[in-house]
Image (cartoon, rainbow, N blue to C red; front, side):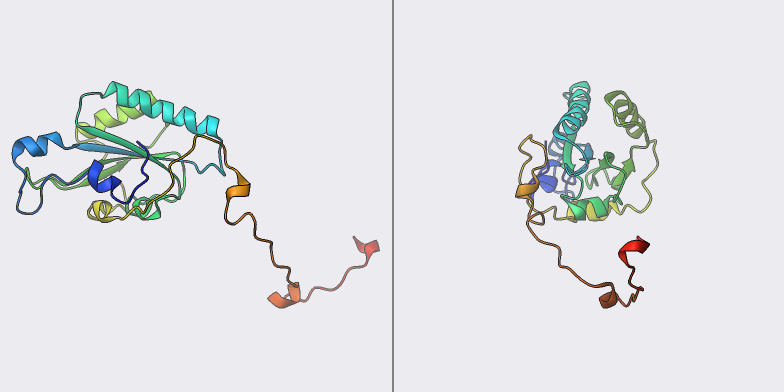
Length: 195
């Protein structure tokens, strides 16, 4: 599932209850107990074919874990900077984070773990099994309490196509010309013969 709306994170991977534990055990059991968030390269840095190959790997993982209380979502790198910040991401895409939401019913704390390795179904399945078994530690710089509070903001769903620079808001802007002297750089002028 592509992360596109402001409420997708809270609806797809909420904490199980609140500080008073208002959900009963059956309600809590119905919620995802492990959320996988994949961040794929922006289309300015890749292609539709490459993105589709990454998403196919996620579909294989979803098939492997069908019927388990897991959520698998993805977003383009840079589309949700608050979520990426909460997960301490900023480079190295594709990236995958396993997030265990807080659980007020069983008094479990939130935890986030980064995939370190190849972004393919086999590696991701192995990674998930490790996280389920308590392995993987915690991702450095991650504050899991900020993940659910992060407002991802709304983005347009991907249309399945390559990046179109004519639709990019920054593409139509002309660069403003400036002189190096404006920057405090007074270089000697070179004649044509010196170049």
